[in-house]
Length: 183
Image (cartoon, rainbow, N blue to C red; front, side, top):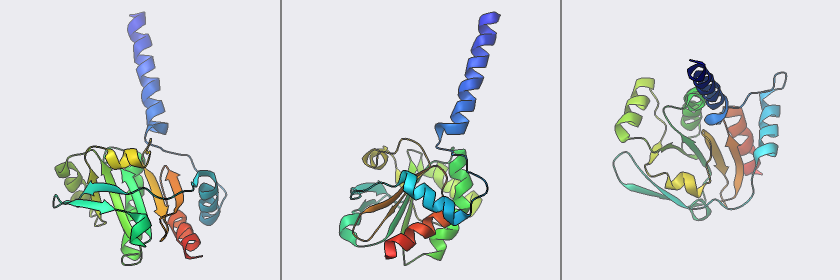
């Protein structure tokens, strides 16, 4: 009985740890403006370097090749999954951001290793219309060294990574990164 209780406690602790950090959930500091939080997030988690090319699958089954360094476009690339609570929490704001910046920014929500039907149902059930790609084998996530989700990248027209944000992303953070890209 004692072993069983110990095992249940261990499983509960691991589950709590996963829910707090396993998907990349990060607590926000209170008392700061959205812009200040965005600046701090970029300073803390920004990376330098050129975004590597990757391939993913579109909903029609065709392969989509992204090469930000060659395309000369602004990109926002978000890695996510339907089962991830922080991913689900940021989706409404990302969907609105993608709509607002359509034609100005190339936005892709890259789903990690879930069947097309699962992703399609999630998007339809929630009314999301943002562009989604499927990373069925996790190769794009490996290329971008995604270790927790959600993870979002903002890439400038020269293919330089301006922001790598691990954890939930806000529109304010993305807007701040776009302002930096325009400079």
